[in-house]
Length: 388
Image 1 (spheres, rainbow, N blue to C red):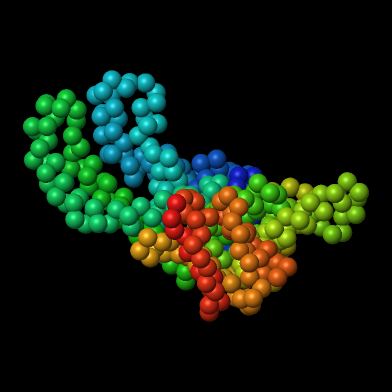
Image 2 (image 1 turned 45 degrees about the horizontal axis):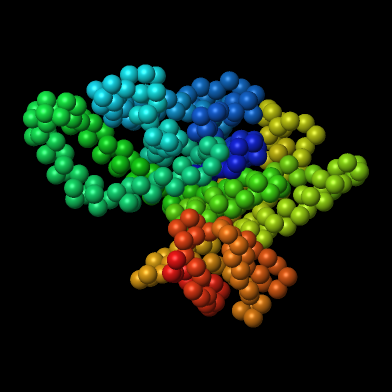
């Protein structure tokens, strides 16, 4: 099975790109499901069909679904949410915000992704294409099980037993409800499911993430941040899709100015994401709605290529810790050491190779440290960060 996630800033057209990939995949004979986990669903609008919370067959080999995030929260987080509501109301928080406070930021998107775990286990489809919420930060939340592993393995079973013993004594004494065993069980189940989902999404032979951008500065900056974090969490970003590029055939004077602006940002995209493959989608004369336009878009993006094959499989950025220093390792194939130069500007690392410039957005962790040194060997640039 293949899983492909499309992410990007809101409004870049990732829903259209995801849907067009699904149509092309299905017409190659692969049983394909395209799923929207974005709470502000637009997948049905793109397909020009009203979708439901369960997979709906659109045509041969193609299914589509808009996941109901509220339903997924109630199903996966219901007992915990019920307990937290009791806890808050016990302390006299009794307004409409109570239920909102019981769902943490990103939780809806995260629990929606767990539906994909069910489909993966059932092996119903050959390909699952996911139209994600506007940023890749939800995927970063999947690192939580890894961080919580020691606590869940060592302390959680002890605390769960202690809670059962203490509950009758602590509740009247503290005046607040203690979590019942069913709540602790649901937390454990969510932890296990998220851990399993994390393993599937970080399996480079199964899952690819593709970032959709427009040739605009703000969009590219956000894509750079997403790319950095996805690399740190070891998700495989296998392609960049640049949407709404003004075609060369357009010669109108008004669009010439925009073409010049786009050219500058197309160069910036190459600098930022090399050596990833980059696909370009022209700005089409009609809006991308319905199967005919999605078919056309799929052809524009991938041509005769297989849209679901792994386009790239190499970790381009890795951060490791050695004693009191962090090492940022960046893959720089086909680079000559004597051509390299390195600068830092705020949260941006600027690497020049001859006349080519590459910009990398630094993760927040490294912003508190200064560059101590750099070494280039075996096509890997290793930059040491330390001090304050």
